[in-house]
Length: 221
Image 1: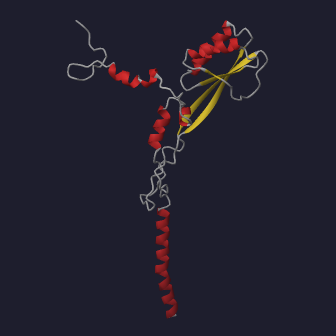
Image 2 (image 1 turned 90 degrees about the vertical axis):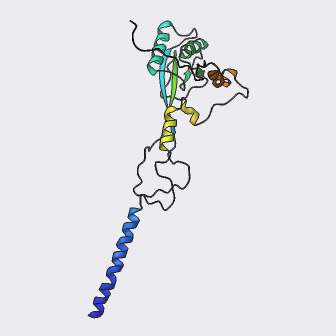
């Protein structure tokens, strides 16, 4: 009997130690494991196509159809970063020129080749396709770290969320996150000297600073 009692007493500390280790492992289950300086939360670019069918002929579009297209562009708030293409089975150059002039009002040029869209273009019609891209960072912000213990010396699961989210929100053309703008191999004077001209055009003030433009407040008596 005494031997059996000693055996039970010997098992009690071992059981307590096993429970303690189990709790310790459970407490570290939320430990980050990214040991690099590359954030796991990267911007993702999504594309969405908007289509608009108009009556088209070899002679182009009439005034009412042009007004419809202009109103559609205004409702979409067409602007920089949007891509406009035309799916015209008749390949009417007059229709393309008319749509191009309407798109140029918003600073957008017509691109060659239209993406595949749902349905068919009816005879006598042309389909205008506006492709719009949007950048976002899925999974951010990420506060899934459950423990302050970091045995892996890793970055947090939300590392990079602020920087990448701000980048995705501020980039003018989300397509640039996938593939940057291609240069022509020549220096473009209008854009190459823009930063320098912005400093040259500033008028110095008497105290060596810059003169800030703006109107004063208050009324005259």
